[in-house]
Length: 61
Image (cartoon, rainbow, N blue to C red; front, top):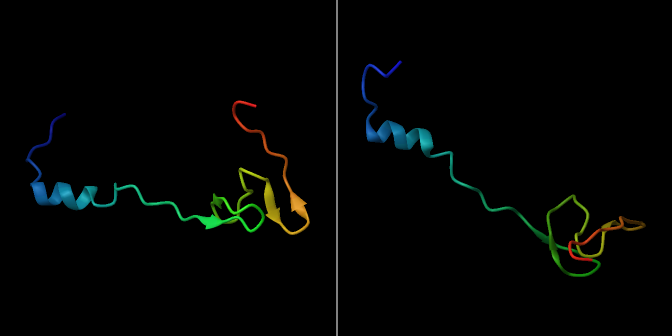
């Protein structure tokens, strides 16, 4: 099936206005100072919260 009528460029652009990538929010790790996403373990040192650290596996090691 093909569309009966062509969509206008404005309508197409309005539909695609939500397709842009959003920048991810980052915070500094209080333990080592590298940037990390909030509410996740630090990829550098594994810090999550005081008293909890997760062992990390780094690529290449």
